[in-house]
Figure 1: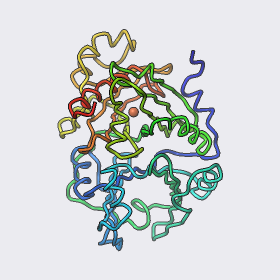
Figure 2 (figure 1 turned 90 degrees about the vertical axis):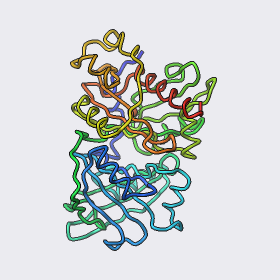
Figure 3 (figure 1 turned 60 degrees about the horizontal axis):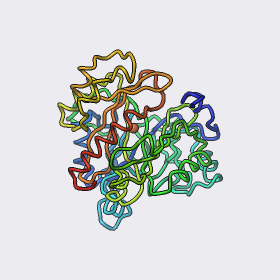
Figure 4 (figure 1 turned 45 degrees about the vertical axis):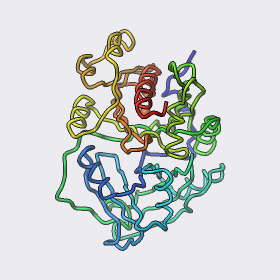
Length: 375
Ligand code: FE2
């Protein structure tokens, strides 16, 4: 029996690494100019900043997009002889950096490397006429990086090296507010090691565990553990494949990403019905949910504010934890490799996740996996 709520478990986290939230997420992509257009048009992001040949950065182009508290950076190298080109060749478009907003980037580096983190970038201070940003970075699973960003003495558009990006093309927001959580897929037998790493190196607490008995279908299974920092602003669920009759979707990801990496980015809204309606109108494709999911929905989740018919029409999922409920929906992969996808989430009291939706997501991906011939 669970004896503590997710919020109580977050209090078990250590405070040697205070984190204020996600600072930015950087994707390495084949064509950042076109990717930026996609995220503006389809997801409602706004132009924020740019770095590239025109601003004195010769080896790459980076476009920074913003929607409320979410910042995305899309980066493309200018030549094949570049570590970013190697990353894209191997993984396809994907998340390279999950940057965390901290009070002290130097201390964050010292505290985490002292506890065993592998350094990616020694602490450094970048300055321009808008002030200074202090940065450092460590490796997490696969080739993914956690960058620590300290920006309390900075008032420019993004950070030194970037210029404000003014665009004549400014599609409206779809109501996305902040990064709720980012999920990592790790290889066979790597779950406990990764969870231990988040506990020891980052001071995070394990707030929820799903084993392969809970997340299983006729064909395949997975295990998942949710790691959270103390204030719950940063949550990193970790998935590992589990043995089943057929290939786990986590294994499919690992095959196509060619290693461990970020599976999905969950972004929050205060009005999931209107956000999903708008995203659909702009061409975003979501995973399907069978109508049977909605037949006994209220028996499973209790009373909710929304009408079941409206949720069913858009295929939005509902689940509950000890503290409240949440509404979720998942996009199809946003590139041709079946790797990264997005989740739209609205929390109504729930601080963690429910096993029911996890299973619904799992089954839905499995149907897509079968269509791709990878099950
Ligand atoms: Fe999620």
